[in-house]
Amino acid sequence: MIRAVLAAAVLVVVVGPVAAAEQARPSGLSVGLFNGVTELRSGAAATYVTTVRNGGSTPAPVTIVLTLPRYATITRADRAVVSGAEARWTTTLAPGESVTESAQAGIGTIALSDDRVIALAAVYQAGAGAPLLVRTADADTVPGTAPEPGGPGIWPWLAGIPLVAAALLWWRRRNA
Image (cartoon, rainbow, N blue to C red):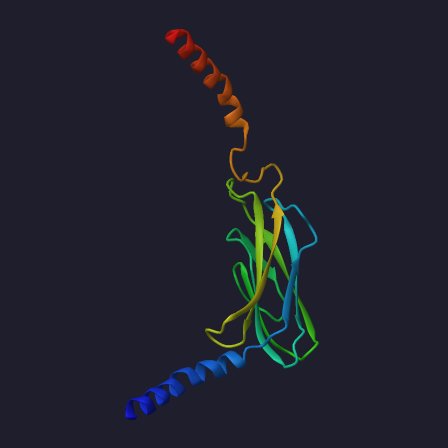
């Protein structure tokens, strides 16, 4: 009996605050990110626009984080805390409210291995160490590069057919 009471007390103490924290997590948030282009090259400038909407029924204190590739630098982002290729905005969205933030960036030298410039917009619950709530990405191609294919496709197999046919013909003649 005492063990059952102690186990229940531990369960309430340990699980109780976790469940309360989960209930306080805002829901109904959505995020969009675009820069109005489909291609970017080294030396270009781009303006990234992030829109967050609270479709939930409670206020949502959030931190919006825009992260650009390592070779980009944010040159302007009003009301944001900027550090290199990252901008952070903190706000509280009322139910049904949207906020749009923008950041101007300079694109540095894109690595030859990169075929896309990828930016991420993430929305976290406000506060240190708070959970990720929703995120999205914007991916622009780099002119002059081809996307990495999913694999070699059928061409190596087709090229191997004459070799297999020749080996079979040789084997049949040898064993005839």
